[in-house]
Length: 258
Image (cartoon, rainbow, N blue to C red; front, side, top):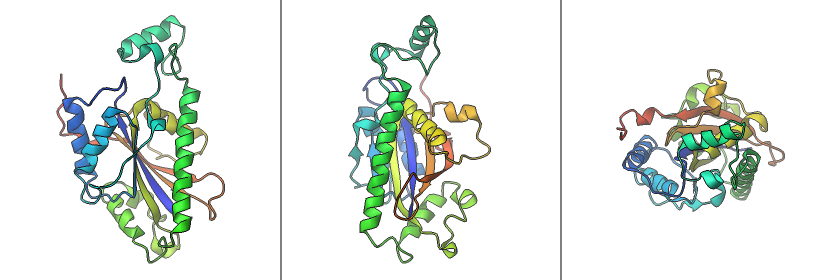
């Protein structure tokens, strides 16, 4: 069944505050990096900083400037209860006092990792059903479809050519991309979603990726890319292949504030 590519972009943690000056620069850098990519869908957390991040990305785009962004509360950062808005050092101190370690520790009134994972799974399954429904209704996803445009726009900046050449080989008879999805969310949320892909979907990750890289929180506007493939009819879970995790080369020229 047609594949779709999911690009996750991480934005900062904490309470619902706007981006800092550095945050706006990072969003612009991500937008410049992705300017030639053709997205078919854009989703974002409905918190202020993610709204500003996705706007900063799309305003640089050659193809997606006027695309409608779907804001979804299921993409919000993990709830930290009484620790909301406090420095990470205080959260770690609270965990230590409770005889636990971060990120497994749940502050009073906070969201457990299992609850966060279920929220991520709920959004992901909704997204899969949406893409499958659209692909089933629209017969344009055929050999004559411009899906190759989606693939070529992605292959220019992501290592699709090396890792996924056989997947996108038109001679192989494999359908092209049915959708290219941009999702802008938050660090702990995306880390939880990575765990879901790893443990539940048995996702294939790059061999060079270490366990610590899989469990670390991405820098702001770090990019993680997955390719998902469904069996004909869309039954069962998709097979998932990770192209990259926490990609951050676009941030090399962004100055950080003290």
